[in-house]
Image 1: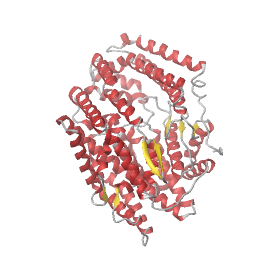
Image 2 (image 1 turned 90 degrees about the horizontal axis):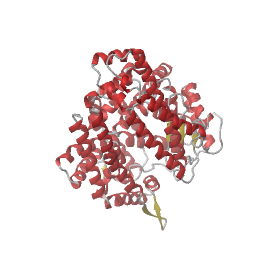
Image 3 (image 1 turned 120 degrees about the vertical axis):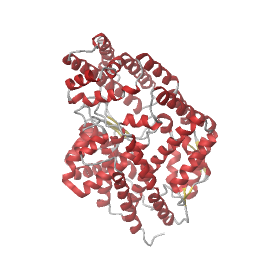
Length: 594
């Protein structure tokens, strides 16, 4: 991996020469042509369709979808590199509109295939071969919940001005929020992202002030934000339970993730059982911070005074060495992203915040967006996003329909990559306080990604039960308070402003029940990493097979092939046992402190 001394900016030349090129304009025209050609085949879709002809049509659908994904990526990546660029804004809007139009133009193929008699569908699935089997089978699996073409188009229109519009309204309202925080005698106006940096401030009063300000602003709009959520939940129930026939609100997300309801129920039940594990951690943290009892303000407080910065070249070297120590192939795939100039790591005005990895289509080298500032968590983020890139490259042999891993498995490579970096840091970092802070950061991250997300999902289940019964905003607030009491027990003092935390969680508005996949993915990787430490070289082929599968196999089936039974409570407990070992290590190293 060649080192760049400073954070670089990506190139979009590998996508049609860039979004302003003539080749890109030709790609837009090609999309329209391919969509028209596919629409012209509608009359051929009848029972008895010859198998060879069916396969040709499937390939046309694939080619159109592949091209659409690449076009969308070109517009999206251009926008995210400068969200204030009016040309990029306009192009992304245009491409989104085109994508919706093409989806409506080609909806007939999916509906036709879903509604075929079983024997006819099985004949065509067999003819299409393994490359398309899972995609076609999944299409058929949605048959009981699919409406007529006319009804589906009505639902699409309803969503545009209903649930989707409500979510957009929520984003519009909350993205305009600004927060005031007094620091060193000066009052600063901050965005939410800037404000929450101070949730990890070493000063207790600053942490408290940051959280109080966060929920003061949200609570001021609580009646409106709660009403938006109530309507989103009602819309979800009306469409999916009343019209489509699902048995429960969470069953919809389980179906999208292709997970049996029982697996998710087991995951959440085991998580509730392990809440005392994190309560034990919070008691340890309180002692080390010199507090009688941890406050909710202090959950992410730093325990050590270790402050270290890593320049960009050093971070790239560390990630490369961590990956290479695991397997040279892992490192070489990550290096391709830098070699193709597909990383945008510099911090600049207008650029999207945060970080992501975008793999447009099979065979394309992913693009990675970072905002690198030299902090330890920036190095972890680099490893995380490059893990996503490795996953995308390994799964590139599948068609565009199935190369992306489903959400429960989407974080497998990225989280595994972070753990490789942690092991590297623990082995190579000479400063004992830095090593100790790495371990505390691991525990904080496990809480945030596993238990916190599981309890969000448990609240959603309760909210989706209460709202159809006419629950008010205050009743939902009371339900969330009960959720917090169970989660933190007697270990953490939770002040009343946190009762409104739920109205500040975008996922429960935009993607109901999305959150449990974080807990699924993190616990899965903890279990996988434990096996890696136990088995060494013998484990690696199993991990590579999981990553190479992408989204071509149901998650539970794929993991079962490699010896992991996600239906068993013992599997999930194994992940929590890894956390328990980490906590025991921290308790041992912290003996006599505090």
